[in-house]
Amino acid sequence: MNARPHAPVTHPTESPFGLQSVCHTLSSANANLDRFAWLGDRLAIAVWTRDTEEAETVYDRPGHHTLSCYLDGGYRTERQKMPGHYGAPSRLCALPGDHESRWWVRGHMHFMHLYFLPEHFTQRAVQELDLEPRELTLADRTYFEDARIATLCQSLANEDWQDPDGLLRTNETAHQVLSLLLRAQGVRRTDASLKGGLSVATRRRLHDYIESHLSQTLTLGELAGVAALSEFHLARMFRTSFGLPPAAWIAQQRLERARTLLRSTALPLAQVAEQCGYANASHFSHRFRESVGVAPTAYRQAIAA
Image 1 (cartoon, rainbow, N blue to C red):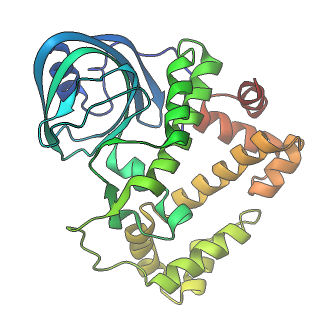
Image 2 (spheres, rainbow, N blue to C red):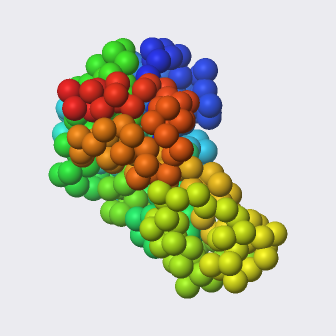
């Protein structure tokens, strides 16, 4: 996760990925964009309000995933292929990047959208589900209920995105939402090609080895020995199965462990650095700030607030 707590960009079209389709669709259908922010990590969030007697809205393969949470209203809004099923506060919709849908919108709606890329959604699959990222995608679900996700979405909407600490907390909460969403609404891809890559046993062995040796220096040669592969073949197959090259995966895991320790313990920075495999506290602070956008102490204070 690479959150950078800068002031939010107020125009969705200034984009690391294309939100133009969804924003144009909503804006042309009498929806008002109340708030918008880029959260870092190629995550974006928006709150919309819409009041209309009746209007049709069409989404056509936007290219990015969307999680929608109704904050208020929506009682007369329905998806055309699901007549008689209506929205309500805390009801959720999961809309994959390749989905197509038509909606009848009537009356008042106040809703939050969380936008994210398919690869961002699945990158945690190895760590959390013991599956390869290429195996999964987001389910197309309309008006499902999940109390934990809905509560987190409400907290996202209530956060101050203009405040650097608030933006950092929003990024953290958004990642919690994606983790829950992956477990609840992640489905196997029917079009996935699983040729190449590591065997399940080898992937698990590498994953466990990296987890148990994060505090130490890890080399490609060492990992190749664990996998019983040449360095060349390991580098290529590791990326296929983990979604990242070995060095990038290890760096990500070190950062994730550091964030967990900063959130959940009062360990001095030197001990956090040691447990995460950084050379010293100074090296850790530099890497953390480079990735997250703030120093470890500032991160700890913001998350604790």
